Length: 306
Ligand code: 13P
Ligand code: SF4
Image (cartoon, rainbow, N blue to C red):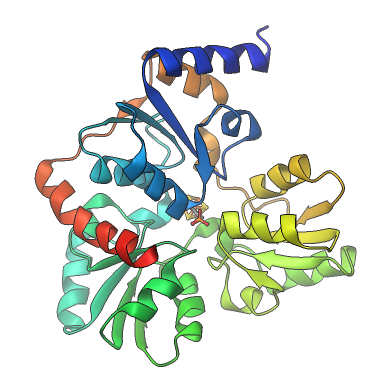
Protein backbone atom coordinates (compact mmCIF):
# COMPACT_ATOMS: atom_id res chain seq x y z
CA UNK A 1 0.00 0.00 0.00
CA UNK A 2 1.27 3.51 -0.85
CA UNK A 3 1.91 5.83 2.07
CA UNK A 4 0.01 9.12 2.23
CA UNK A 5 3.30 11.00 1.99
CA UNK A 6 4.28 9.13 -1.22
CA UNK A 7 1.02 10.25 -2.83
CA UNK A 8 1.56 13.79 -1.56
CA UNK A 9 5.11 13.89 -2.97
CA UNK A 10 3.85 12.74 -6.37
CA UNK A 11 1.13 15.44 -6.34
CA UNK A 12 3.72 18.10 -5.45
CA UNK A 13 6.11 16.89 -8.18
CA UNK A 14 3.38 16.86 -10.85
CA UNK A 15 1.85 20.21 -9.91
CA UNK A 16 5.26 21.88 -10.34
CA UNK A 17 5.91 20.06 -13.63
CA UNK A 18 2.47 20.99 -15.03
CA UNK A 19 2.20 24.55 -13.64
CA UNK A 20 -0.81 23.72 -11.47
CA UNK A 21 -1.97 25.74 -8.48
CA UNK A 22 -3.93 23.74 -5.90
CA UNK A 23 -6.48 25.69 -3.87
CA UNK A 24 -8.17 23.98 -0.91
CA UNK A 25 -11.11 25.17 1.18
CA UNK A 26 -10.71 24.74 4.95
CA UNK A 27 -13.35 21.97 4.95
CA UNK A 28 -10.97 19.67 3.05
CA UNK A 29 -9.03 16.95 4.86
CA UNK A 30 -5.60 17.58 6.42
CA UNK A 31 -3.76 15.51 3.78
CA UNK A 32 -5.24 17.65 0.96
CA UNK A 33 -4.56 20.92 2.81
CA UNK A 34 -0.89 19.88 3.08
CA UNK A 35 -0.40 19.74 -0.72
CA UNK A 36 -2.29 22.98 -1.44
CA UNK A 37 -0.61 26.22 -2.51
CA UNK A 38 -3.29 28.13 -0.66
CA UNK A 39 -5.95 27.20 1.90
CA UNK A 40 -8.65 29.47 3.21
CA UNK A 41 -12.27 30.51 3.42
CA UNK A 42 -14.37 31.36 0.38
CA UNK A 43 -13.24 34.99 0.30
CA UNK A 44 -9.54 34.10 0.61
CA UNK A 45 -9.84 31.53 -2.17
CA UNK A 46 -11.58 34.03 -4.48
CA UNK A 47 -8.79 36.56 -3.92
CA UNK A 48 -6.09 33.93 -4.61
CA UNK A 49 -7.91 32.85 -7.77
CA UNK A 50 -7.61 36.37 -9.12
CA UNK A 51 -3.89 36.56 -8.24
CA UNK A 52 -2.43 33.12 -9.05
CA UNK A 53 0.11 33.17 -11.86
CA UNK A 54 -0.36 29.47 -12.78
CA UNK A 55 -1.87 28.25 -16.05
CA UNK A 56 -3.97 25.58 -14.31
CA UNK A 57 -5.94 25.55 -11.07
CA UNK A 58 -7.34 22.57 -9.19
CA UNK A 59 -10.03 23.59 -6.72
CA UNK A 60 -10.40 21.20 -3.81
CA UNK A 61 -13.78 22.31 -2.55
CA UNK A 62 -17.18 22.49 -4.25
CA UNK A 63 -18.37 23.56 -7.71
CA UNK A 64 -19.27 27.20 -7.01
CA UNK A 65 -15.68 27.75 -5.80
CA UNK A 66 -14.23 26.32 -9.02
CA UNK A 67 -16.69 28.44 -11.04
CA UNK A 68 -15.53 31.54 -9.16
CA UNK A 69 -11.94 30.79 -10.21
CA UNK A 70 -13.01 30.38 -13.85
CA UNK A 71 -15.01 33.63 -13.76
CA UNK A 72 -12.08 35.58 -12.32
CA UNK A 73 -9.44 33.93 -14.51
CA UNK A 74 -11.11 32.62 -17.70
CA UNK A 75 -7.73 32.15 -19.39
CA UNK A 76 -6.84 29.43 -16.86
CA UNK A 77 -7.89 25.80 -17.06
CA UNK A 78 -9.81 25.09 -13.86
CA UNK A 79 -10.60 21.61 -12.54
CA UNK A 80 -12.69 20.02 -9.81
CA UNK A 81 -11.15 16.67 -8.79
CA UNK A 82 -14.68 15.23 -8.38
CA UNK A 83 -17.38 16.69 -10.59
CA UNK A 84 -20.18 15.69 -8.22
CA UNK A 85 -18.80 17.91 -5.42
CA UNK A 86 -21.56 20.51 -5.37
CA UNK A 87 -23.02 22.73 -2.66
CA UNK A 88 -26.73 21.99 -2.16
CA UNK A 89 -27.34 25.59 -1.06
CA UNK A 90 -25.92 26.92 -4.36
CA UNK A 91 -28.72 25.17 -6.27
CA UNK A 92 -31.70 26.01 -4.05
CA UNK A 93 -32.80 28.84 -6.32
CA UNK A 94 -32.97 28.70 -10.11
CA UNK A 95 -32.70 31.55 -12.59
CA UNK A 96 -36.48 31.81 -13.21
CA UNK A 97 -37.20 31.98 -9.48
CA UNK A 98 -34.61 34.75 -9.15
CA UNK A 99 -36.17 36.67 -12.07
CA UNK A 100 -39.55 36.49 -10.29
CA UNK A 101 -38.00 37.67 -7.01
CA UNK A 102 -36.36 40.61 -8.78
CA UNK A 103 -39.74 41.63 -10.22
CA UNK A 104 -41.35 41.28 -6.81
CA UNK A 105 -38.62 43.36 -5.13
CA UNK A 106 -37.99 46.00 -7.75
CA UNK A 107 -35.61 48.70 -6.48
CA UNK A 108 -33.76 46.30 -4.18
CA UNK A 109 -30.03 45.62 -4.59
CA UNK A 110 -29.62 41.88 -5.16
CA UNK A 111 -26.85 40.51 -2.94
CA UNK A 112 -25.88 36.89 -3.44
CA UNK A 113 -23.87 34.71 -1.13
CA UNK A 114 -20.89 33.32 -3.07
CA UNK A 115 -22.53 29.88 -2.55
CA UNK A 116 -24.60 30.33 -5.73
CA UNK A 117 -24.23 29.03 -9.28
CA UNK A 118 -22.46 31.11 -11.94
CA UNK A 119 -25.81 31.33 -13.74
CA UNK A 120 -27.53 32.95 -10.72
CA UNK A 121 -24.65 35.39 -10.29
CA UNK A 122 -25.36 36.79 -13.78
CA UNK A 123 -28.51 38.43 -12.32
CA UNK A 124 -26.98 39.71 -9.06
CA UNK A 125 -25.54 43.12 -8.21
CA UNK A 126 -23.07 42.24 -5.47
CA UNK A 127 -21.59 38.97 -4.22
CA UNK A 128 -20.50 38.40 -0.60
CA UNK A 129 -18.90 35.71 1.54
CA UNK A 130 -19.49 35.04 5.22
CA UNK A 131 -16.35 37.00 6.18
CA UNK A 132 -17.04 39.98 3.92
CA UNK A 133 -20.85 40.35 3.95
CA UNK A 134 -21.25 42.93 6.72
CA UNK A 135 -18.41 45.13 5.44
CA UNK A 136 -19.70 45.03 1.86
CA UNK A 137 -23.43 45.48 2.50
CA UNK A 138 -22.74 48.51 4.74
CA UNK A 139 -21.16 50.20 1.70
CA UNK A 140 -24.09 49.56 -0.66
CA UNK A 141 -25.77 52.82 -1.60
CA UNK A 142 -29.31 51.44 -1.22
CA UNK A 143 -31.28 50.73 1.97
CA UNK A 144 -33.19 47.89 0.34
CA UNK A 145 -31.35 44.56 0.09
CA UNK A 146 -32.62 41.29 -1.39
CA UNK A 147 -30.24 38.70 0.10
CA UNK A 148 -30.07 35.21 -1.47
CA UNK A 149 -30.04 32.31 -0.68
CA UNK A 150 -28.99 31.79 2.98
CA UNK A 151 -31.57 33.33 5.34
CA UNK A 152 -29.43 32.41 8.39
CA UNK A 153 -26.39 34.33 7.15
CA UNK A 154 -28.82 37.04 6.01
CA UNK A 155 -30.35 37.27 9.49
CA UNK A 156 -26.89 37.54 11.07
CA UNK A 157 -25.86 40.31 8.65
CA UNK A 158 -29.14 42.23 8.96
CA UNK A 159 -28.71 42.40 12.75
CA UNK A 160 -25.35 44.15 12.26
CA UNK A 161 -26.91 46.63 9.79
CA UNK A 162 -30.35 47.47 11.31
CA UNK A 163 -30.60 50.67 9.23
CA UNK A 164 -31.17 48.65 6.04
CA UNK A 165 -34.32 46.75 5.05
CA UNK A 166 -33.62 43.10 4.12
CA UNK A 167 -35.69 40.52 2.23
CA UNK A 168 -34.75 36.82 2.42
CA UNK A 169 -35.80 33.53 0.90
CA UNK A 170 -35.96 30.20 2.74
CA UNK A 171 -32.52 28.94 1.70
CA UNK A 172 -29.52 27.79 3.68
CA UNK A 173 -26.81 25.25 4.38
CA UNK A 174 -28.20 21.84 5.39
CA UNK A 175 -25.01 21.02 7.29
CA UNK A 176 -25.08 24.10 9.54
CA UNK A 177 -28.89 24.38 9.79
CA UNK A 178 -28.87 20.90 11.36
CA UNK A 179 -27.31 22.27 14.57
CA UNK A 180 -29.93 23.02 17.22
CA UNK A 181 -30.19 24.84 20.56
CA UNK A 182 -30.38 21.43 22.24
CA UNK A 183 -27.13 20.35 20.57
CA UNK A 184 -25.50 23.51 21.94
CA UNK A 185 -26.92 22.95 25.45
CA UNK A 186 -25.63 19.35 25.42
CA UNK A 187 -22.18 20.41 24.20
CA UNK A 188 -21.96 23.19 26.81
CA UNK A 189 -23.00 20.76 29.55
CA UNK A 190 -20.37 18.26 28.41
CA UNK A 191 -17.63 20.93 28.15
CA UNK A 192 -18.35 23.61 30.75
CA UNK A 193 -16.28 26.75 30.29
CA UNK A 194 -15.45 26.04 26.63
CA UNK A 195 -16.10 29.00 24.30
CA UNK A 196 -18.69 28.47 21.56
CA UNK A 197 -17.47 29.52 18.08
CA UNK A 198 -20.04 29.28 15.28
CA UNK A 199 -20.41 29.98 11.57
CA UNK A 200 -23.13 32.49 10.56
CA UNK A 201 -24.75 29.78 8.39
CA UNK A 202 -26.05 28.35 11.71
CA UNK A 203 -29.61 29.10 12.85
CA UNK A 204 -30.09 32.52 14.53
CA UNK A 205 -30.88 30.91 17.91
CA UNK A 206 -27.56 28.99 17.79
CA UNK A 207 -25.66 32.09 16.69
CA UNK A 208 -27.25 34.00 19.61
CA UNK A 209 -25.68 31.55 22.11
CA UNK A 210 -22.16 32.00 20.64
CA UNK A 211 -19.08 33.68 22.06
CA UNK A 212 -17.75 34.31 18.55
CA UNK A 213 -19.32 34.17 15.06
CA UNK A 214 -17.22 34.06 11.91
CA UNK A 215 -16.19 32.39 8.68
CA UNK A 216 -14.09 29.23 8.72
CA UNK A 217 -10.75 31.07 8.76
CA UNK A 218 -12.08 33.65 11.22
CA UNK A 219 -13.05 30.83 13.60
CA UNK A 220 -9.60 29.26 13.21
CA UNK A 221 -7.83 32.60 13.76
CA UNK A 222 -9.96 33.38 16.82
CA UNK A 223 -9.17 30.00 18.42
CA UNK A 224 -5.46 30.32 17.58
CA UNK A 225 -5.16 33.79 19.13
CA UNK A 226 -7.42 33.29 22.15
CA UNK A 227 -5.81 32.75 25.58
CA UNK A 228 -8.64 30.26 26.30
CA UNK A 229 -7.87 26.55 26.08
CA UNK A 230 -11.19 24.88 25.20
CA UNK A 231 -13.62 25.56 22.36
CA UNK A 232 -16.88 24.11 21.04
CA UNK A 233 -16.82 24.44 17.24
CA UNK A 234 -20.08 25.13 15.41
CA UNK A 235 -19.07 24.51 11.85
CA UNK A 236 -18.02 21.60 9.63
CA UNK A 237 -16.13 18.98 11.66
CA UNK A 238 -12.87 19.29 9.68
CA UNK A 239 -12.24 22.65 11.37
CA UNK A 240 -11.98 20.80 14.71
CA UNK A 241 -9.46 18.44 13.16
CA UNK A 242 -7.30 21.23 11.64
CA UNK A 243 -7.36 23.20 14.89
CA UNK A 244 -6.45 20.12 16.93
CA UNK A 245 -3.43 19.41 14.69
CA UNK A 246 -2.22 23.04 14.78
CA UNK A 247 -2.82 23.60 18.50
CA UNK A 248 -2.36 20.33 20.40
CA UNK A 249 -2.16 22.34 23.65
CA UNK A 250 -5.85 23.29 23.26
CA UNK A 251 -9.10 21.31 23.19
CA UNK A 252 -11.63 21.48 20.36
CA UNK A 253 -15.05 19.81 20.50
CA UNK A 254 -17.58 19.70 17.65
CA UNK A 255 -21.12 20.77 18.69
CA UNK A 256 -22.17 17.38 17.34
CA UNK A 257 -20.24 14.74 15.46
CA UNK A 258 -22.86 14.99 12.67
CA UNK A 259 -21.77 18.41 11.41
CA UNK A 260 -20.20 16.97 8.26
CA UNK A 261 -20.56 18.37 4.73
CA UNK A 262 -20.57 15.23 2.59
CA UNK A 263 -20.17 17.36 -0.52
CA UNK A 264 -16.89 18.77 0.73
CA UNK A 265 -15.84 15.30 1.82
CA UNK A 266 -16.44 13.73 -1.60
CA UNK A 267 -12.87 14.66 -2.64
CA UNK A 268 -9.98 12.64 -1.24
CA UNK A 269 -6.21 12.76 -1.74
CA UNK A 270 -6.24 10.10 -4.47
CA UNK A 271 -8.81 12.16 -6.42
CA UNK A 272 -6.36 15.06 -6.28
CA UNK A 273 -3.57 12.75 -7.52
CA UNK A 274 -5.74 11.57 -10.43
CA UNK A 275 -6.58 15.17 -11.27
CA UNK A 276 -2.92 16.31 -11.40
CA UNK A 277 -2.14 13.18 -13.43
CA UNK A 278 -4.88 14.22 -15.87
CA UNK A 279 -6.69 10.87 -15.67
CA UNK A 280 -9.78 12.13 -13.82
CA UNK A 281 -11.52 15.30 -12.67
CA UNK A 282 -13.86 17.72 -14.42
CA UNK A 283 -12.71 20.81 -16.25
CA UNK A 284 -14.98 23.80 -15.56
CA UNK A 285 -16.47 25.15 -18.76
CA UNK A 286 -18.51 28.37 -18.67
CA UNK A 287 -19.57 30.35 -21.74
CA UNK A 288 -18.13 33.84 -22.19
CA UNK A 289 -21.50 35.55 -21.69
CA UNK A 290 -22.01 33.86 -18.30
CA UNK A 291 -18.44 34.69 -17.30
CA UNK A 292 -18.70 38.39 -18.17
CA UNK A 293 -22.12 38.84 -16.52
CA UNK A 294 -21.29 36.81 -13.36
CA UNK A 295 -17.98 38.65 -12.99
CA UNK A 296 -19.77 41.96 -12.31
CA UNK A 297 -21.00 40.96 -8.83
CA UNK A 298 -17.74 39.17 -7.93
CA UNK A 299 -15.67 42.21 -8.95
CA UNK A 300 -17.91 44.31 -6.72
CA UNK A 301 -17.19 41.91 -3.85
CA UNK A 302 -13.43 42.16 -4.37
CA UNK A 303 -13.59 45.96 -4.73
CA UNK A 304 -15.69 46.54 -1.58
CA UNK A 305 -14.34 43.62 0.45
CA UNK A 306 -10.72 44.77 0.19
P1 13P B 1 -16.56 30.24 4.42
O1 13P B 1 -15.43 29.49 3.88
O2 13P B 1 -16.68 31.55 3.74
O3 13P B 1 -16.54 30.35 5.89
O4 13P B 1 -17.89 29.43 4.02
C1 13P B 1 -18.19 28.19 4.53
C2 13P B 1 -18.89 27.33 3.59
O5 13P B 1 -19.87 26.74 3.89
C3 13P B 1 -18.34 27.16 2.28
O6 13P B 1 -19.12 26.36 1.56
FE1 SF4 C 1 -22.57 24.09 0.95
FE2 SF4 C 1 -22.97 23.96 3.56
FE3 SF4 C 1 -21.31 22.24 2.41
FE4 SF4 C 1 -20.64 24.81 2.62
S1 SF4 C 1 -20.94 23.37 4.29
S2 SF4 C 1 -20.42 23.50 0.81
S3 SF4 C 1 -22.64 25.81 2.37
S4 SF4 C 1 -23.54 22.39 2.05
